[in-house]
Image 1 (tube, helix red, strand yellow):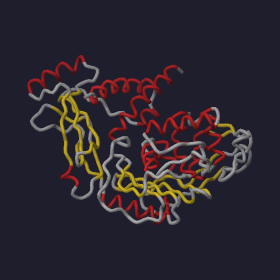
Image 2 (image 1 turned 60 degrees about the horizontal axis):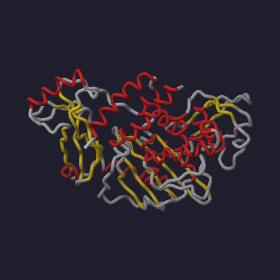
Image 3 (image 1 turned 180 degrees about the vertical axis):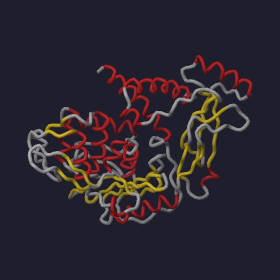
Image 4 (image 1 turned 120 degrees about the vertical axis):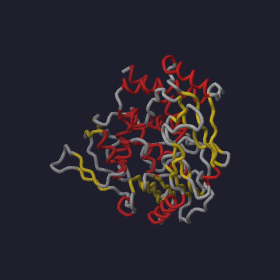
Length: 401
């Protein structure tokens, strides 16, 4: 138990730093004129980089209805065990609004309940999940707001796990885009929201639960693979969709949009057509005239002409650039330094705005594999703590001025 708590504590410290190159990166606003939509507020994000490609009143704080369940799902996945039994309490039973019609006292695995949450938007499932993970809805809401702070959602506040209208419960299109990009890096979340149909055991009846995803984008748009619908009488129609084409995943958000299916198709088309994901650096790519290689690759969505506005700056840890110094340092680091052969970093900028960094290593030294969110979620405790310990040292050195 103490080891699991330690692992979560270290993950909490390091994952926000890892995300500097993805959803946590300061992003440069796009210069291309975006599509016209019927939404009161909208945003489009590249999932890999976290770059906002299009925003219409993206920081306007609004009601978000069942888009709330994106946060509910990712917190539950990160904090809970998928095979754990979730029991339906009197407060979760017969919850108002959309429902998967759980029975009082019924038990269902967390994984299946998450499918009911995301495919059919079950408010009863949301409350049951919240009580299971947080001890109560109020306890779970604390976890939701803590996660929002960790991800950097500066215009969001949650009051419940289901999205029923409540004062003080709000977010923005930009924040929901960032949250969705973060969540889509988790393989469990990604799998659930891409599912069109799901069956689950029903302990009270002879027939199984059978859920069809309310997200029509999965059948309407080529490459669609998520995410969540939402509606209340005060929030009106809300939608988050995602799609993947040519190895690039985009996520679109609209709040209060009466023509959201068509608007999302236009937004996603706009992103794929105008901001392809460009490979700026390859993993273990040699640096010219130096005994150094990149520690990982780097991709970023760029509009036509933006490649010329991209700059790279090499920052060495000891500010030494002579090849003989590099070679000596490499030999010493291979045997004595817990950060392996880390030499420094390459800072990427677009129009003088930072968009990410990649580590640089001495040639011939061991390059640790880049830890991923799915490793933290699914890996064994021993494996996770090993690479987290190594990467904590690497990142502290890499990001120090």
